[in-house]
Image (cartoon, rainbow, N blue to C red):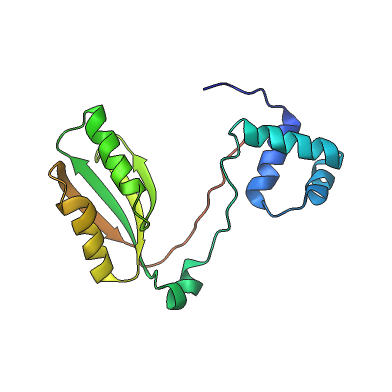
Length: 163
């Protein structure tokens, strides 16, 4: 993985984009006090370097629950019998393709994985559990926590203070 040199302006751009990726190039340039062409060039370089993976809209799960049916959120701990690299990667690949799995983390110590999943209701969660966990002979233990309230949600990465 190639390392990219970033400066204080790049850090400010990344910070502003994490807060609001919908800003126009003009508005972003004004906030950072640089010219719009410079801003555009720098953001393009940050994207090409892979520092900006993608830009998404964060939806309100609670407000959409009556429409989309995603009213059940679960945090799932998974422990595998075999933890060799092939087994870990096989599990990661299988859960990554499932639409109900929003996040997957390989963790240590404790369980091997923590997942964040959203389903419409308990029967959908049961189907997900059978599809991803029960049918996999390498899954030793599954521990699920059901969310009763989302107090905070974010994806912002803390950055060093730009001088």
